Length: 488
Image 1 (cartoon, rainbow, N blue to C red):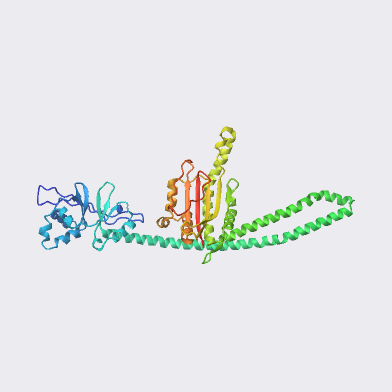
Image 2 (cartoon, rainbow, N blue to C red):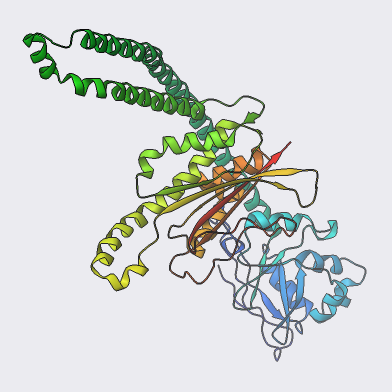
């Protein structure tokens, strides 16, 4: 919509520009910024008179105000409401209408709210509401990148803000429903796995309980057989042929080894099922003491098929007391981090095998061979730098994989915020929330890309000068995670 410029009382005076009246029905999303809202373009030099602006306001009833410029520089804002307040004063029409806008602005000077065009609507609305009572109805000045200014009606901002709040509430409701469904699925899966584990443990118990008897019986039978051979050294030809056919000497030596193999397999199966039960059990209402080393060992056992032989796991366990925590949720955090490390090392393992074959044919290049993929797990207890009476349990998990680029690391850190989690909650974002919100701990992540081994990626976590430096990295590239859990 456009209007023709109005004639001035002074024909020699330059005419005012045509104000731009935007569409009042924008399409909004949670990421909408001020430039997506209806912005009014009406900025003029301050030497124009009040009667000129009053005529424009009369022709454009939705125009919230005018941006005043002085020699091309932003001077201020004169809103429609401020102008009307001056005109209704005694002799206001005769005093202020013929005056220049600079004179009017000197009387109506206020602290304007000036925001960049890329400010989000959800962030701008609270800033507008924090203004004083006499400025609540004043429009917002939006600064564009080309050094020009637009006006945003406060009513349009409030309407957009409430619309986005409704969208945000709907998104949170849908996410809450999704989380409830996912939680119920995980609980059902946990009960199912726990039932299967019990069914596996029963026959394993039978095998384990009878192995001791089988070992005793076999030893007794071998003793009886040896006694027979001692008292009857000359065997009938039929028995001698039978001993050679069944390979009695081999059976006598191999039977104990067979029983030991069965015992080792049953013990390994029992340990695996126990680890599966501990990982899938449901957390209680209150946290309980847990052994983090047992949790780590159990998770590594569950992930053993993915670790294969190419990935080396180095454990540097310190002396840890039992930690009060929600063991099931903390196990989920640990398996998320270890899975992330394994995924990063799988490609490196393939490259390592290819490089090994290549360097084997080039002896002078063997020193450039890739390091073996490795995951290092370190645990220790550290004192609190602010409160010497408090202590933290620190779990440090690092890999020497390809690492993340600065952009990838920034995306991961942004996913920890509430706004990003509303869009998509990743496994690392869920881990961050469990450690920080559920356990009152700290969750740090650092990464160094392998493309620039001489340059360390800056630590993008929130700096904490009171926190001691983390354990030194053992690799020039890779990703490091630190979990800080309070000891109570």
